Image 1 (cartoon, rainbow, N blue to C red):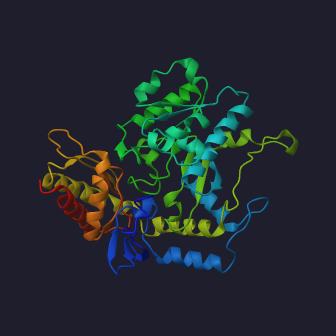
Image 2 (image 1 turned 30 degrees about the vertical axis):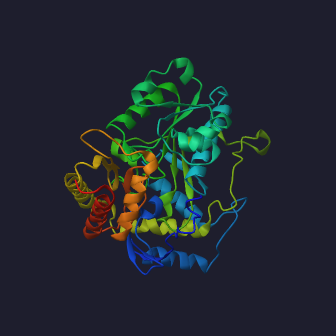
Image 3 (image 1 turned 180 degrees about the vertical axis):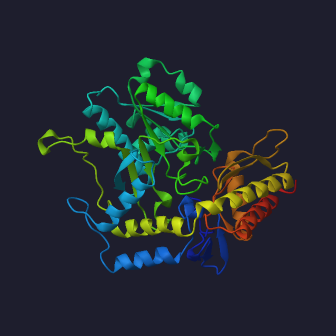
Length: 416
């Protein structure tokens, strides 16, 4: 915060945007290289999304979900269920953001086991370098020390594992106390865009089924087309027991989250008033009609514009461009990881020698700041450059983004 509040530091004020591009108070245009922190899907000021918001504003902006309901929320819940394989995730619980979607899943898992007569199932398994949010339970599920270490003793009982193989070695006495396992399917975001081996998610599904453990998929980042499919689990034919959605749910317009659950989880909570089976959880803005209306419009755009069908060529082009970037900067570009339209590019001092920059030098941040001069806005994870463009990005947009990263690398790290 001292750096941020220094007299010489002036943050860029973003004043407008259209499509995949943003406008700054400095009068310049910038490509939105991280989809406004992984949220924007169809672009800024999309006519159909804007119209949905204006239409809902003419009716009502908020309705309490505490004993009442509203049409956009009801329609969105049905639309989200209809996107799942029939008879799988049939129930929807709305909240506000990715962290609260995870909190809902955690509390549902714990209470589900209590209601089924298994109160000993209070633990969770998660993975090293995972990120699931910053609220207390979500943070302690995470495997990144920077976000979680200060708070672990206050949070959930969680064991972290490096791989599926490590998890499979867990003694039965431990797994019998687990309420759930949580994973970012296919790729870990805040870990530096690190991908899982092919088949890992499918193997995790089998392990959970064998041990009676609920599988929670955190699709907050990976959902809504980022990986090339609507949801990352589709790549391996895996449906979790609880799915967490946020970020791209509204196309990047408004905060909204959803936790989807299997019917048999929902049924465990059914009871009369006096049985106290209720899921006592809710937010003031749960199921906000403005957010739900624009989320419905976003799903309509996926269908109208056949968004998913157009991603294949873009994903292939991005792979080629990243290969060229690595070839142009063989010394300073280490590993490059890609999953759909999600990419992580490691900046190193010497790739051949396996030598990284000291993290205190903030090399990744300086490269991104230099890339801003070439018309790109993104931010790194330490020394991993992140490129996660809106799905509406054109081939020319992607070329511009990678060229700007190349400019930033040479400006900060030098040639080679």
